[in-house]
Length: 302
Image 1: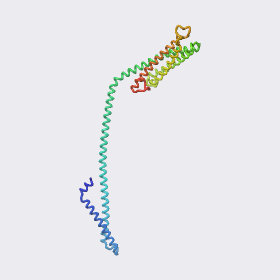
Image 2 (image 1 turned 45 degrees about the vertical axis):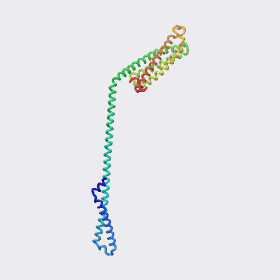
Image 3 (image 1 turned 60 degrees about the vertical axis):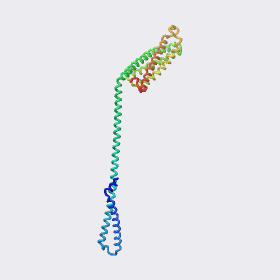
Image 4 (image 1 turned 135 degrees about the vertical axis):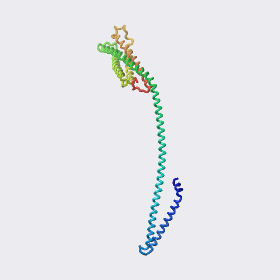
């Protein structure tokens, strides 16, 4: 489009170029004929000096004309290159404006999303003080109940330990046990009560004051309580089976240590009930923790 506009502005340029080309061809033809004519003359090189000077001038004119044509061609090439550069510059400017507008719209969208998220978080923070006291009350009851239950387990475990240890020492010293099964059950309850006292004390200590320790987690409590429940179930069931139908308070003259053996059986079942209750509480806390997205490794209080 720019070249056509240039041709319309200078309509005589093409005619002038064709005329110069025609004149140049005629000049070359004339110079060639003159040079051939001078060669055909047998005179001295200094003859026909004006003619020779005219030929040299024509040759210089031809050289200058060729240089002018080359410069015109170079100027035209540079003009086309400049026009192309301007076109690309305009295109890059338009592309930059489009990219800038896209980035601005994206930034505005992100700011709007951020504002919505902040408003949602503020609304949740306004609701949080209402829900927080309930969670704090539940944690307080859990902490208090944990200490009470484990204190009772430790207390009755110490009583069971004292009875089973005394009976085991008597059986070992006098061999006056009523049956081998009863002796073995007494020894097993001695081990179980020792296990319960030591590990219950550890769990009680590590639950309060540092509830976020490994021993204060739900997984640790579930593992310890389930294993302890198995021990006490086996011990209580075995001592009950060993004593069933054989002992009562009125047969003290026939069976030694009747009262101690009955107490051993009763306290074994009491401890089993306490451990079962503790498992139920820990399982309930685990269900509540799963509902709020916590795992079994999390502490029992928030």
